[in-house]
Length: 379
Picture (spheres, rainbow, N blue to C red):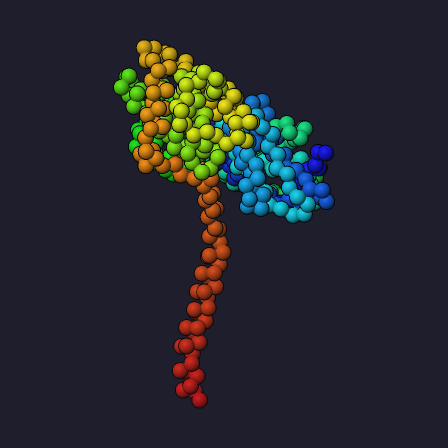
């Protein structure tokens, strides 16, 4: 029997946006009925601006009351089953696209029985500007669609709202630039290594954008080989990470290399190193190895035009083999995927008011101290 949707009591969303990629973190307080309930976040994670395509979902994971309960790849349904009573659910997802949406789960009116407090925070490597709009969920499981307000194209990077059943639902749209195009934003291996150590969307942008572009735009065959080895080492480091979302990215990168960047489908003839780490079964079962598009850095056209003589079909698997044989200590370090959002700076007005009160109190004390000797003399 299909469980009813969970009632949303309050929720927050943090959207960390990079170069053609994003990390979405959703935290919600929910209430389940006597037989439990379900949270279906697929439509939220694939939310899109009207007139644009939905982002690609690379992989996701979920926690219920701090305990890992589910994960999935690009073709799986994003559903968390919760027990009766109150719970806290957290979902983290890796997305790829040119624009991303921060909207509430409670856009689905069936999960709203009282006003829901919603807070969205966003961070973008492209700057502070955001576009505000109104979200609607035409069908549960289908992507949320956001109609933007062109007059509100310089919104602050955060949103605080109350979701009321039947009323318009506010959302923010964040630009991420092209998925793949131009030159890499970080052009040196040292710079890319530093971004990987930083974790979060900086590392994600390097893995899904900068590294593939660095290979495609390398000036000569020697540079191509060096960047292939860098890509393979980063792929293995990600595949060995504790966070299953990093492992998903590492697996996609490795498959792309083994297939000469033509696809991310790992077929029976795909030449993977014998000791390459295997992905979690839940990820493999939901399309991580057989989905051709989501999060796949397809740069074969660029490679063919820029390096027509280079034998990628032989060189790339060889680089993967070298990375597999390398010690873990020699691999680049990758920071955590979820980086805590920076707190909004506190308003200066409360501090100014406190300072004014303190100054006034100080003047009163000084005046009393000056008046005290004169009063004693009068006695």
